[in-house]
Image (cartoon, rainbow, N blue to C red; front, top):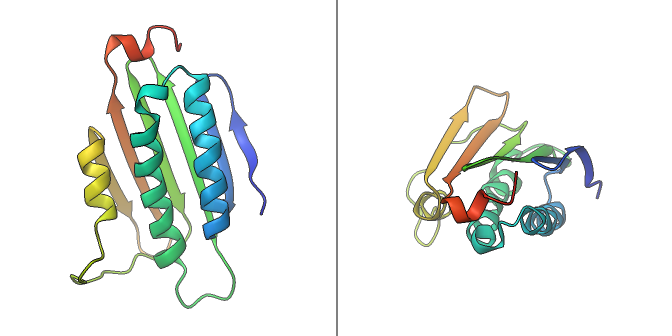
Length: 143
């Protein structure tokens, strides 16, 4: 596991690692710590859960049929009243039909964030952007 920061400042945080379950767990814990350092503990459970669901999709689906894990990155930007979290991978998007007891991760993310955007482009990877519009008491001391 190689959870080294690619970029971290007070208002921007970014890590890249192999797309594995262990790495996703480590990134989840690091994101939680960063959110708490930004005085965003009140929303950290929702943010971490939504981000983890997107990372789990990368781990499980993006690199099917490849030998070894691909790469994924997790970036968070806190700019005043807005928190944006992006999850990117270098895998391949696969269309899946309805599967019983599956496919709830992105719907869950949509329910606990203000917006979810999923962009995939051929074989170059997938980018999931999660956005939260924060009330004043969540960001007044954070920037």
